[in-house]
Image: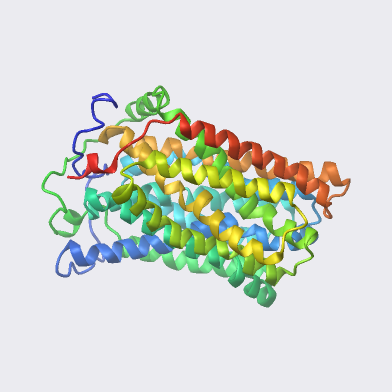
Length: 454
């Protein structure tokens, strides 16, 4: 089936590929049906996704402290922060394949346990090398969470609820963003940045056990009825077939405008919101770490409010993903223009509003891109396409974080104290990226949510 011919056909809910039937141990009581127990599944996975966003953005409020502790400059700090994103980007295609072949529950359990180990290694690191190793393990581990979670939710929730549920997942990610700001500042003052990541590692180990105990791939694995009578039973796919799916996705012209948009929009968000935004506010405006944490926490508010609101806007009001993406992209260009050309003259209160909008237009909008890609492809390619498009935000961040660090060092002539002019030069990169993203999304193919209701 071609992507064009499948666009306006109703899409039945579908099961998820899994390996041979597993012996169920410590099986939870089924309760009264999937309508109740599915929220247990959702809540467990949502907490895991909270940790994903915590790790992505946590360097922003402790970057200056970490550079001093590890005795590294901006370029090295950018490389350290980017280690998470390199690992995450590399894993995005394999996670779709592993989730299809192993089953998403087993995959999340194994990989989230790896992330817990990585957090502990990061907290114990006494050199840049070991810090990079720890952050790489975290990136590898949490890379599984989003794609596999979407696969599980596809079986526990109906097709008409999918955009709403992904929006809720992104809103939970917003809570993760918040924990990486004010709470991290408080905890780092109490335990030090190392103690914070040791504690997060221990909590992640506990959550790994909860995922294995409470989550199941499908309601049928617990003897519960399917959420849809139209469910299609999947067949096992070989590695060759999975790679053929990747090739087919990459050969689809409609995929690339969305991929470029994802590379730049989310790459800039992770680079600025997840690393360089904190040092900028501290060094240009002279704000304390606690003040910076309060400002960056506004990203969380934007995510929490924006994700479900944007899903409602695209599904119920505009019946269009593209229109929402274009609107958000235009806002991003304006926001970065404001920051670049009024770099040291904005009132501090403006940053609270700026980061709320940024959290909505550059972060929570990501779910719209993922949903659009899912809707462009037939069911048997939807998981693979989602995995491929998820490579690009993390590839963008892994390139931009050290690049901006290098520009800051080059323009400042210093490794850790950066000038206003240096930040201005760095922000021109962000501004150009947002402008290219706007052009790219204008060239994208639209999808219409009402065409996918079943």
